[in-house]
Amino acid sequence: MLILGIETSCDETAAALVEDGINLISQTVASSQDLHIKTGGIVPEVASREQVLAMIPVLQETLKVIKNPSREIDAIAVTNGPGLIGSLLIGVETAKALAFAWNKPLITVNHLVGHIYGNFVSDSDLVNQDIFPSVVLVASGGHSDLILLKNHGEWTWLGGTLDDAAGEAFDKAARLLNLGYPGGPAISKAATSCVNLTIQQFDNFRLPRPLINEINYDFSFSGLKTALSKLVKDHSPLSVDLTNRLAHEFQGAIVECLVAKTLKAVKSFDAKSIMLAGGVSANKRLREYCVKSAGNVPVFYPDFKFCTDNAAMIASAAYFNQKVVPWESVEPDSSLCLS
Ligand code: KG4
Ligand code: ZN
Image: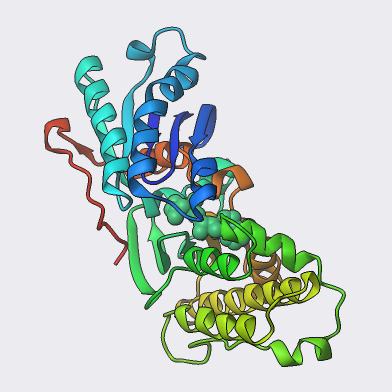
């Protein structure tokens, strides 16, 4: 079954063709990130205008590999939320138009569920493995959730962030440290530059690990940002060395909190695997620390290109969760969640 996926929830305009949920035939991702670098974050109006400009060229590029799209494609999948409403609207209306013109079924996909399927397009053998129930950590720019995935389309929400999402925390910290946007990769790069420093050198720059020992599956990252801003203020102007140290400590605090709650859930529910998903799953420290801490429990994470927003994950999620809806009734819903 060949599905055309469309993703426009934020600042990426993406389309992909995926066969049977696991075989990537083609994919295109256009990003308006360069424009947002200038403003240090996303301006929704700017992002949605860029979606309008990129949508058709991205589709054309993706469909180049097949001769007759209207005959060869079996269904259209589109992200209907959560995300920026103006951006979502472009993908949703494009998908509706194609479903109408080609007379194809339309499958809507929750963007956060989509992120989970970045794992399935990365590793086509995952479908053959005994992975359920799996504890899934979905950590992106807008959300940080922990769910117990019992099977495709069947999950229990365990907890999530009480304030800032993990990616958002990385972005805000990078701004405080003057490292630019997007913050995750910038913090990660700076942190790598200080791995050789000894533990004692960090003592004065210790940040809290919020909620780490609490009996719940929740996260809280806004206090961390406040603690970091205090350190930045106290030690300004920051040397490169100190910036790197603070980036390392901030990354460590977030990673330790995310992994602690993930492992707690694995233990409580006797999970057979862990899946990392969302933009923050591109973080190398998170991957390594989770694998090391999980012992015998297998940890899966998407290839880098399927961590951040893409449409292959949307087409894959649609294949495994085929809920066809009449195209006439589809509207974007910026408030969709996993709970
Ligand atoms: O999933 P995503 O592409 O978009 C949303 O759905 O929000 O996630 C974007 C987020 C940004 O906050 C970015 O800073 C973060 O993912 N991110 C990272 C890394 N790469 C991207 N965070 C930590 N380490 C990374 N290497
Ligand atoms: Zn995302």
